[in-house]
Image (tube, rainbow, N blue to C red; front, top):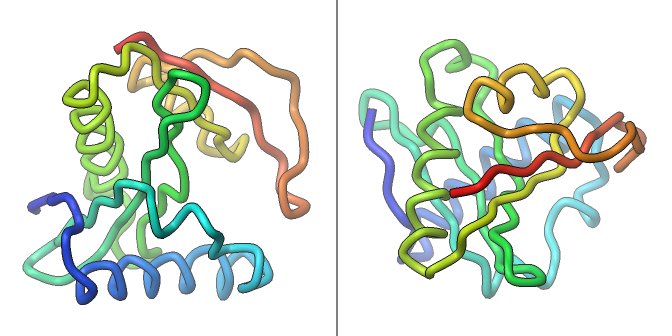
Length: 140
């Protein structure tokens, strides 16, 4: 497994394809809501498993904090630690940019996963695209 910051169109296209498979095809998020104006300016990471794109996520600075978003792993590659690799790569970028706090809106089924990585829940449950989420934070 290797992770890298996305710096070219080919990797970004691979990341978008992973997001389409997970969020649009698997979870039913409308495609027009999955991709937004922040994709052009966010930092994206791509995780490869056996040389093939398998996981991705993006990072934006919002109100002085690192906001981790669009974290997903292809269904066929879950349970290999790729989600952890995405989060760690995004946190590394955040630290490089001098950010000291990371936050994310995680799906409630993933709350225990993020808790294992040091995140704590700071909100009640709310819906995004009809999917239950919570806001979680971590000091970097």
